[in-house]
Every structure is written in C-alpha cells, then in structure tokens.
Length: 285
Image (cartoon, rainbow, N blue to C red; front, side, top):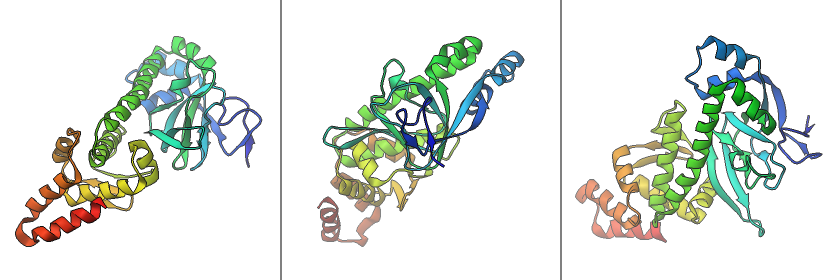
C-alpha cells in the first residue's frame, strides 16, 4: 500500500509515494554497513546501538528525492543503485551520477532548503534515512559517525570530479572508457568484482551522463569490444584488459579509428584492409 510521507520524505509533503518505511534499524548497523573502523569499541557500539535510524524501501523506478522538494534528510544507500539527475525547464533529464552501496544521497542539499537534484532507484533498493536535525546529535554522541559522514560527503563530492573527468574527453569512446573505469572502482570499493559487473542503468542514462547521443553509446561499446578492451553481453560487462583500458582512457582525443587500427593489428592479416575500413565506416555512421 502507498504511504503518505510527511517527514524523512521520499516526496513533497501530502504526496502519496511508493517509498515506504521498511522498519527501524540503529546507528550501529549503519556504521557496520559503512565499514567504520570504530567497530569493536564497547562504548561506541553500546551508544550507537541505542540510536534509532529509519530504514526505507525504494522500489525500482521510484524517486526517493524530488528536485525542488524540501531538503530534510540524508540517505545512505544500503542496497541497490540510484540515478542522480536534474531536469531542465524544457523537460530534458541530465544524469549527473550513479550511486550504490555505502554512498550518500542528498549531501548537495545539506545546507539548502530544497533539493537541487533528484534521485531515483534503478533497482529495488533500501536506504538509511537520517533527518538533518539529528546529524549534530548523532555526531556528538558517536564521533565515529562524524568521521563516516565526512567520508561519505567526500565521496559525494568526488562524483562531481568524476563527471568533469568524463566530460573532459573529446572522443565518445574515451568518455565511455573513463565511465567504465569509474564503475570498476565503485565495484571494488563495495567488495565486488572490478572486472565483471552488471550495468543497472540503460544506454540512454549512460548517454545522458556522457553528453552524447544514445546511438553513439552503442557504437562506443562496440568499438571498445572490437579493440578487445571489454566484452559486452546486453548489460553484462567484462573488462578484458584493465591496463590497456586505463591507458586508452588517459587520452582525450583518441578516436574510434584509433581503436579499429589497434584491433586490426592484433587480428593480423586475416582480414583485408578494405574489410576493416568498411567495418569502421559502419560504426562511425
């Protein structure tokens, strides 16, 4: 059943939202999820175990944060993946980042009255919600939480740096390579494989973040696969050569033709120059 949300909101007040309380947890469980190095200290665990933190369920496709809605809470992703975006006046949706386990949402609105961006779940997800008015008290009572809040804020700021790094590349294939490497790092940080992962976001969301057309993203995936840097099967991605992908990502202007030429050298004389030129022409079309 849909639940009206009036505080710790997934929507503006009086709006019925599919987001729903999942139950109550504790600050101790949040610290464990974040991997705090203060765990094991009796006083810390005792105090944190008495402090209540709400756990919220966010179904796939549902907005947890609405752009322009009152800013009243921070959210720590426990499970799932979120898309962070803003919508222009003409309705265009610009994807700014993707956030997964252990990352914080709404940090950009901590000192603002309303949210400057929105966040929606790309899969069934759960988040820890802490009201802004509770942050100071939690930090005083459990200094370890204050340290984790600083780290989470630093990770949130690093998303802006990551976006700038992606957009600094001219070639769309390089932008995609940088994006995949950023995802790889996020996977490693959450204890998952940095080489094999499932893309929770679709090609259109990736295209929006990279600032290119939807079709260009598909061609860029094909180009990286032809160069034997990655293997792609629908949304499943495997990085075949991490070192070469990193080396390629450091270039800002290398083109699809550069990738095709490198791939052709590895394939050897089995295919004619005319055939290779034809393939590259079709990808660039």
